[in-house]
Length: 198
Image (cartoon, one colour):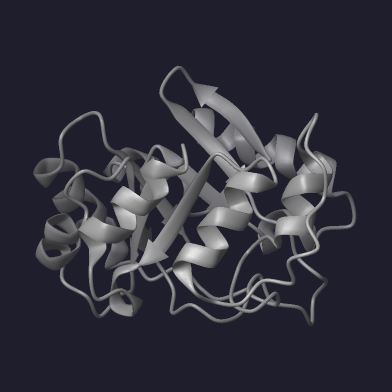
């Protein structure tokens, strides 16, 4: 789910399984292929249960109507091949990197990618606190990447952090617990989008 913040910025909301759940409950994927198929008009479901192998996941995402796939640079030995594999399936390609990975390494790995995802938490569970040092990493990314490459930030995005992340260079802002842990997720989403608009 996404909402337009302005002509160049989107607020992305990932699904969650509840307060005890994780955004990575389906074999370390935010969305399973069956979920993608279920929300994509004109696409049927897939009986592929999915294993955490990039080619299989990318193929399943494409078959079920997804439009992009993002891989973690720390888990990929050959980023150019992964980007090419995504493109061969008609998918946009994204490169994610963890807080310990240098911005320079992420930029190198992202050559030819459509987006770079800066993790502002350690991947694993929802509800973590935004790491303030991520703001400088976002600024470095924006300075190093071509303007056509989107910058996404994921982790700890809420009313207190969304505007700073946007101003630091992120134009795809991922929110989860800031929406789904609220009594009224729809209103929480609207309020967060309003803050992101500045």
